[in-house]
Structure formats: C-alpha cells, structure tokens
Amino acid sequence: MGFTLATWNINSVRLRSPIVQKLLQEEGPDVLCLQETKSPVDKIPLEDFAALGYGHMVARGQKGYNGVAILSRLPIKEAGSEDFAALGHARHIAGELENGVVIHNFYVPAGGDEPNRDKNEKFGQKLDYLTEMRDWFHKDAPQKSILVGDLNIAPREDDVWDHKKLLKVVSHTPIEVEHLAEVQDAGAWIDVTRQDIPEGRLYSWWSYRARDWDAADKGRRLDHVWATKDIAAAGHSSRVMRDARGWEKPSDHAPVFATFDL
Image (cartoon, rainbow, N blue to C red; front, side, top):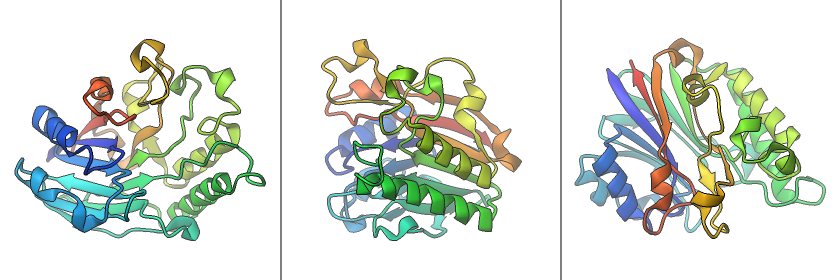
C-alpha cells in the first residue's frame, strides 16, 4: 500500500480550518499530521475534515496551547502518547495504520528566546524533552515507523538562511542540534526529506515578523519527516509546500510531504 503523508504546524486548527480543508482538497494526502492545534480534542472541527473523506483521527489536545492530531482517510488506531519531561503538555500522539506502520507526531517545545537553561526555563525544558525522547527510543527501538512534526530545530547549515548568524539563536544552536542528532541516532531514524533533497537550502518556517517573508526568505527547516531504516528506502517525493505559507490567514509553517510505497 502506498500512501502520502504531510506534516504541518497549523497554529490553531479551529482558526485555520479553512486552509486545512484547502490543503486536503487540493493536495489530498492520505494522512495529515498537525501540530499546535491549540484545541481540546472534542473541539477540533473533525466534521469539516470528515466531509472531505478524512473521518479518522487520533489526537491529544488542550485549551489554547500545543496539541497534536493525525487526520487520515485510511483507518488508523491510536498507538499511545508520551509526556516527555513531565510538562503536562499535549505534544505527542502515535497512530498505527492497517499495514502496521506506526506514525509518531511530535511538537517539540520551542525553547524560548535565550539559549541558556540557567536563565531560561523553557530552553531547559526543550533539552530535557529531547533527552527523554532519546532515552525512550533507546529503550524501545522503533521499527516500521515514521516520525514527523515540528521538532523546532533546524539541524543543518543549509536548513537556515544564515548559519553563522543563527548559531546563537534558539533552534540552530549547537547544543540543540546535538540533542536532536542523539534522538535520531537512538531510533536509527533516517531524515527522509534530506534523503530525497540532499543538497541546497530548504526551509519550512518563515517568521510572521518579516514584512515580506517570501522576498526576505529568512527561513528555517523546523518541520521534519523521518523513517526507521527498515522502511526509509520506501520514502520518496519529498517536498515543502511553500505556497501554503502565502495563503490567506496562513500559519508561519509550510506543510512538508513525503510518499511511502509500503
């Protein structure tokens, strides 16, 4: 069974239900993983998506903050969720497709503005969250799994608009990149996006602060699609749907796509 998957930090699923519907109608991914839904699960407008054929959902939510959901037109069952670093936040949900593929959807903490855990509690929470992710994947090695989401780290030099300028900016600091690499190594995850697009600058997030985000193009690749080694070779056709960043009332993130022949 082949299926196409997309991941998108939507920055409020209720506020932006119209552009979620637009994506589902125009692009038709089989599975759409959303982060920062900012909604209790029972308030997610599932009826809007079910009308387009996406009647299956697994999700974790809370009022006004965080939140993760997997919408699917393929049957999917919940496969657990974890509260890493005991933050009490809705930041992870896993779902299993009928073919046995497990999809992990993550919203890693952003980490605040100051990359110093002594001065900034949020940065410490981010590092702790990543450490517990690492330990979890070490303990229970994933197989036949895909990990997606807003991981809030742009790891490579060409994942940001200016490597040197951003070395001391949260999301691209060496300590964050190191922590993310440890998570990746722990699960033997393959970065499917960069497997498909190995060279060149690639971004999935552009700040709302930029007057003309498209022309300035000061982006970062914060949104990721990984797969375990046993299925990574089945992944292809990766792309960032940059146009969606320019839609009406957009998220500051663009959807990232990949197709898996499984």
